[in-house]
Amino acid sequence: MSHRRAASVAQRSRSCFASSPACLRFPTFSSPASPAAMMFRRQSLFAMLIAAIAATSPSVLAATADDGPAYGPELQGFDYPAPVRQFAFTSQGEAMHMAYMDIRPEHANGRTAVLLHGKNFCAATWEGTIKVLSAAGYRVIAPDQIGFCKSSKPARYQYSFQQLARNTHALLESAGVGQATVIGHSTGGMLAMRYALMYPQQTEQLALVNPIGLEDWKAKGVPSLSVDQWYARELATSADKIRGYEQATYYVGTWRPEYEPWVQMLAGMNRGPGKQQVAWNSALIYDMIFTQPVVYELGALKTQTLLLIGDKDTTAIAKDAAPPEVRAKVGNYPALAQLTLKALPNAKLVEFPDLGHAPQMQDPQAFHKALLDGLAALPASR
Image (cartoon, rainbow, N blue to C red):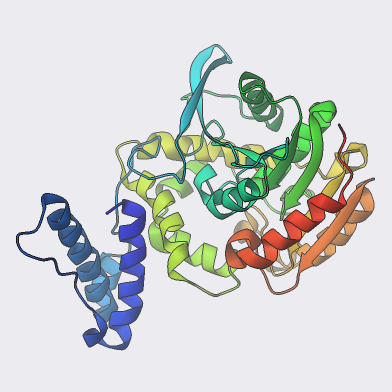
């Protein structure tokens, strides 16, 4: 059983056992069991046991709050929904590689969609969107940016959205992609906007899913954190902290078992042998996000743009370090959506009133219908 499946089993078992221990049904196999079946049983039993113990004992729950798989610094051991390729290149004098998935459809429509993930996400979290776009005829390319997930995590790197856009453009050129529909979520939305500003001729359409960078947090009074402070925060993270943040911000206080693998994806790298390397790159990336808002350049973005906004989102980087009066005025996505719509020369807005920061994961059916309908209604620069 993969680590993603084990994490999902554990989450379901935790909820089940908390309501009634009798609801657990351990897997059985005919005798004699194959080695693979025995391994499946052992992993299932372990996941269910941990979940059951945690559900019945608050003290043990605290002790096991960060239990789960450990992954390598490039997310070794975590399954992706499609084969992972590597784009090798040199940047800032250092050899590195970008991991990416390149999914070709059975019935091509002649277009390519590029999916750019957010800060607490990986290319794999686009799993549902990849399937929908592929079924609609798009070739889909989903990279892990440098510093994230299965890509290189350099010890010294000057992170900027311009640099990440250049890296992405080089990857697409190597894959033979001249023009693409660029779809970015969260931090990936910031990157998508930067990409379109730098490469307007190569950007057919833009879709922005709850992008950040639509306001200048520092100018609004959110205190700046040093890279060392970000690093200390990242070293101290855990599955419980990640889960709590995602539940509140991404899913509007709700939780479903299918969200758990994405928690373990992040927490697993923090448990693994490359914890310091992962945390350091994450700290540098947070500093990049905080100091490089794109809000001041929205008027220059001429690409046809689809805004897809979950109105219950409250994301604002480092707002927990701000005083209450500042926290109250940042991360207001209904207001940010309207301001962004007015600032962008060629934009259409679709709002999801009851969804949070990750509408593509919280309500995939509604989101994907809006995405496909919205892209079909937008002119494409070709």
